[in-house]
Image (cartoon, rainbow, N blue to C red; front, side, top):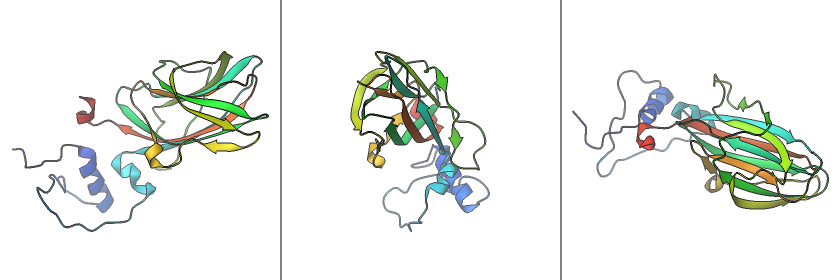
Length: 204
């Protein structure tokens, strides 16, 4: 029999069970109807995995090539994974470099696929996301340009400053950092993100 205000997303109850080491059935199967007293508990990033959020990072240098524009692509090929980019850091090598951040659904990767790293040693297994780098004459557009930026020579910039600017990358989506005007220039890029399996309610 269904409960009043029953919670149907299992990962939230699993979080409570794991965080408090509880046994038995779901410890909080429903939400209060009106008011409920509560005590806040200070918790940090180290418990995100209890909510089935896994955190990852990757660094790469996108190579320079004569007459070509370099790019780094962050793509979600999965049908049931949601990712959130928490930080993008980029540094142009050599002269100052103009970049655009593009958002689209390219369906493919760039020439070199990178090795990612879990940012929590308790996580077993690889990320479902694919990060790649490459270059092409005239660039490799994947969709709409949503951010433009410039890095002075040898300096780095961050494109995600706080959590309201985090970038959601759903199934089939991709984010690409593309040099806009300066050919034959390498750049360094770092991505930090979290990902989890979508709930059944999010797939409908």
